Image: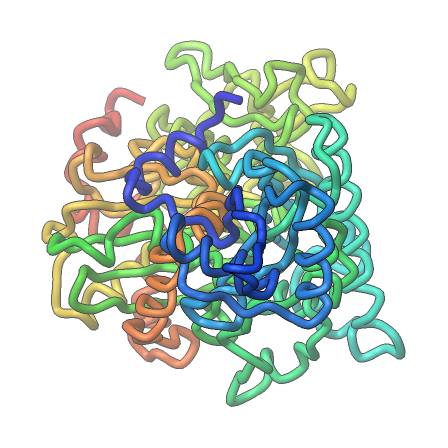
Length: 536
């Protein structure tokens, strides 16, 4: 399957890095004789070490019985499945099969988002993504925002219900992918899951109550590798599951995955990574140090506080351009169908175009009259698409109130970027790479984001999309033990900056809530595009 996450993964992994969490080894074993009457399991493990170079793995008592029986039933040729699990470099034998089954070794990586869940089916031996799919997170019915779901956990059985919802949707999508590719469930040996700290707590059935209360402590940051059966997930009876570690309450494994995929932790160059979802996480640093800050810069861009907003899915307007003469908009949607709403990248485009055309001023107020401009309940608004053009039959409109919410969102983003760089004593011009992760990063036009003052005015080639880095990072963690261990190194290197208690943040935020900024000299490229007052 040709998909962008596959390309990202191959860029990160070299041939030498392909060392999956679970391996299968086919062995042909000499038959015992009076001259060589070693035990059956000893015989198998000796040849494993001699021919495949594996140190003697842990073998449970039930597996001892199975190896002996399989060895004699299969004419002394069998396939062992080994995982590192909790036994360090020794590994553990988790399955034995007659004959050569070494090419049937599969894993599933999961990006456990609060809005959407992405699934990747991997051939662990070849290091290839065979399939991918996504589904809406069913927990949304108990709150689109994380805090509502945390409060839902205060109800009797609330946490168990949220956990059950996730497990059920995982099993359904995993089973569908396996059936599509005619893969037996018992050949699914490993899973990995990346998500923010709260989503991982829901998934593992751990109480999230202290995550949102001072001093903001999760139950656990670094989990072990668990048997998948303990969570009720389908697969081989001894399949294992790895959860990417988190740094704290507001910096989860999805952020660490982004750092891993970007490679910024290995680079001398200074880089920033921004992951915009329900919240926005910002990572600054290089191979010597990493600083992370998190803030609420995401909700408006996911459609949470904009009436016509929606998540990035089929029917969402992702790109907007406005005719400079007629002031009418032309739109492109995800999937190419009629528009149903507008997602984050479309909102950034729309605000930038309205500003460049002079329809809105620096405060986000509509100041021009046009056929697309109207007034609703005393509030001016701009019609992006009329009802006869949309898939709902209703106009898609953005009002001055919506624009005000977007100004707060873009202002919070730029302010967070300003604060974290100032704390580190660097300027935006020192940055060699500006990585944008998540669904937002896959669609955003950096030029438009600069135009509204959401991100700094630096060379556009500095901006690089990582697409779904959480999903890619989860895939890599299954395919490379070295990369998986590097996630712990990344976690230990991180310093967390709490923006909510930073005095500079609130002082700078007000200045950022204008287009592009009260200090327009910070955005020279925007000044060159903006029409002069006399030409409006």
